[in-house]
Image 1 (cartoon, one colour):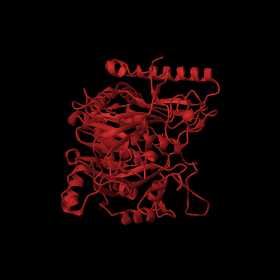
Image 2 (tube, helix red, strand yellow):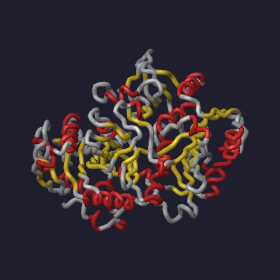
Image 3 (cartoon, one colour):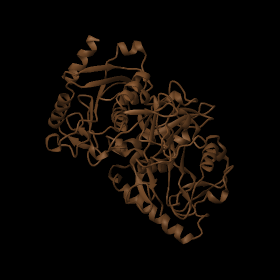
Image 4 (cartoon, one colour):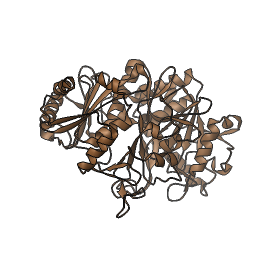
Amino acid sequence: MAERKKSIDSLLESNVKNVNWNLNVSELIQKTIISKQGKLTSSGALACDTGVFTGRSPKDKYIVRDENTENTVWWGDVNNEFSVENYNTLYARMQAFMKDKEIYVKDCIACSIDKYKLNIRLISETAWHSLFAHNLFLRLSKSELENFIADWNIICLPNFLAVPDIDKTRSSNFTVINFTTKVILIGGSAYTGEIKKGIFTVLNFLLPTKYKALSMHCSANIGQKNDTAIFFGLSGTGKTTLSADPNRVLIGDDEHGWDDSSVFNFEGGCYAKCVNLSQEKEPQIFNAIRYGTLLENVIFYENTDVVDYQNTEITENTRAAYPLHFIPNSVSPSIGYPPKNIFFLTADAFGVLPPISKLSSSQAMYHFISGYTAKVAGTEAGITEPQVTFSACFGKPFLPIHPTKYAELLGNKLKENEVNVWLVNTGWSGGSYGVGDRIKLEYTRAMISSALNGILANVDFERESFFGLEIPKICPNVPSEILNPMNPWSDKKSYNDTAIKLANAFKENFELYRENASIEIINGGPIV
């Protein structure tokens, strides 16, 4: 313990009141309840509120600009620069804040393959943040903990509020990543996703630059023939839901790497959205919310300890953080072979994109760098009609290097492996949001199943007119009339006008990347 205390003092250089070292799940839950920061639900899960921030704050995320990042980081509106001097000032003020505080230390690992493993030490001021790290990252044995040396340290102090005039932040909350000191500073926000995505950003830098491995914001699972499938998609497109397949084993639901011989999980847990969750629609996720799981920002039915998952009074971004083994058909270690199928999931609220279509390598790179979905009315304040949303590589806020680098890595891997790439619309059909209908989940599952089972390899395809997408003419258990997106529209001219509008939105977005893109990527775009 003396050596551990010494290592903490060398990092924080402050006289903390007490250090809670790697408490177990029950101890962390008990500490949270005693401090009145959380409550047990009827299922046994621990429910906590993240306060003012119920999601990430991308504009308040920074990377320290120094000799190690000057010429490698993609500087701009995604990666805001932070000077070494300002980092040192902020770090010192956080050290001072820790004086006489009780803190929690959780040691864990990211990356399920030894070659890439990252030893992480989270230092937090709340027990439930420590529980989050325990659930989301890879857990260590007692012997591994005894010899643990951190590669990266995260200091998470939700109650430390930055002073912009002093700390040179935009507001009182912040996430600052320093690739030289290997420290992530988080303050002013209790939203645990900042911890998770801070490490994801680190791996998005290290894997492509150091190992030439592709880092991915995706879920992944394995079929009975050891065939790996990857699912890319922004929030609300069904990435977690569709990868939690009872007939396939889960590698992971959110963050993975792809090297020469494998697809591997960065994490040891899942951070699933809970809005409108039900046992009928998503039984694996629903049943994973039990003792040991951390729930965030949920609301209870009045005068009960039963969670009302339909209630979004606090936020639509309600979350459940649980260990991967809470999903009964997950694989351990969380590693699979290179993929046979890749799915790009998009909730197209304009009803233009086909429910499923096959992409060429060129189109795959283009749609990967586009990362399209749509927001619909009611999801955010001020949105009254569908809005296009693009997020490069389906994870733009977490890309420290230029998106074309990831797209090129994807293209190389598609050439090295025989991979089918599918674009799947989980959004609307027969019209835009408000006119058309949401594509039934059972249809989407049937189309994905047919792709995975090789059934779609033996059907005829037709070419769609605006994006050049190859559409299957038939698919078992799916009405053929919806496969071509134009067919369900009663007003064909309206469809054409909407399709042209969406294609032009793709083109406009791509101008951000054209200068650095290869001809192959450029040629994968819309054909109108």
